[in-house]
Amino acid sequence: VLVGASFGGVVAHALAAGLTARGVEVPRVVMLDAYHPHGYADGERPPPGRELPYVAALLAASLRVSLPPEAAADLNVALLHLLRPYRRLVAPDANVATLREDLARAARWMREAEAHPACATALPATDLTYFQAATRDAENRNAARWSALHRRVEVIAAPGDHFAVIRDAAALVEAVVPELCALDRGVA
Image (cartoon, rainbow, N blue to C red; front, side):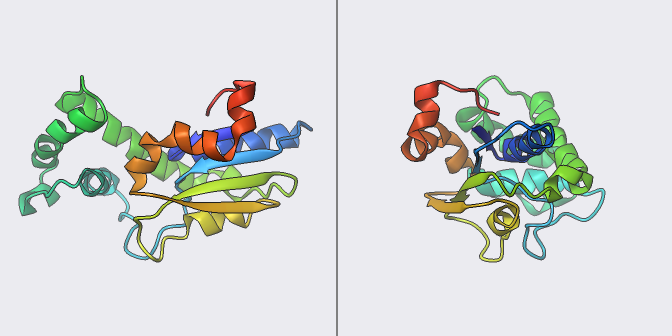
């Protein structure tokens, strides 16, 4: 069983695809509100080259931080408004530089996942448990895109937004896949 939260769900699926291609059985992939490169609603996808401000705006929405209008044109303004809640809720030791690095990493992952062939690899012998944030755009198609690639699918609406699902990941997985916790397997 492979488990991945957010972009880790993409990694879990890619690992399952690689293992399956080598003849290793992967009975289940568990994804916690995982991004799919073709699963976002119209208008959710950032324009090419604007991924970093886009990720900053997503983080602001998840942290419930109102960014001033000038933050759209000046990433430093956005970072200064995001730093305090980011420290409080995500990374207590973060500074502006580490926050920028985290956002840059997320933006790079978005660009790279777009072209990764594993995102289109069907796993007809693998079940999927997908935890979808209940607070999301109505046209978000991430769960549907991943579901089309797996044998049996269970989509579970998890309370809250993307970051709430990530924060509650251990409890969510234990509630649905107790054998995973009993076996003390790793998490992707």
